[in-house]
Amino acid sequence: MRRKEELMQQRSDETRGGIVCDKCGMSFDTKEELDRHVEETHAAEQERPSS
Image 1: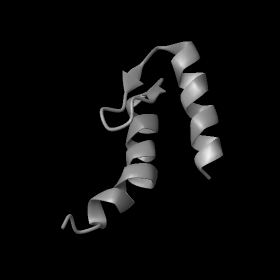
Image 2: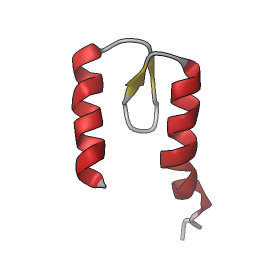
Image 3: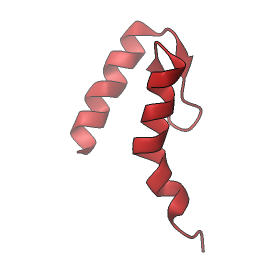
Image 4: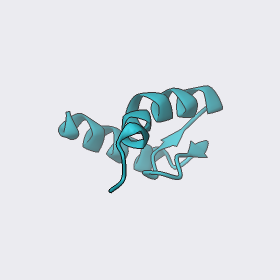
């Protein structure tokens, strides 16, 4: 799974446009894509208790 995220990150670095996720730096063409990314990628991180 991590490899796929790295490939997506490389692609977003190449395009350098649109809206950037403030949590990981990935960029998206639309806010809808960003919202979906945050829900799928970062929502699980927020559910974990920080101890």
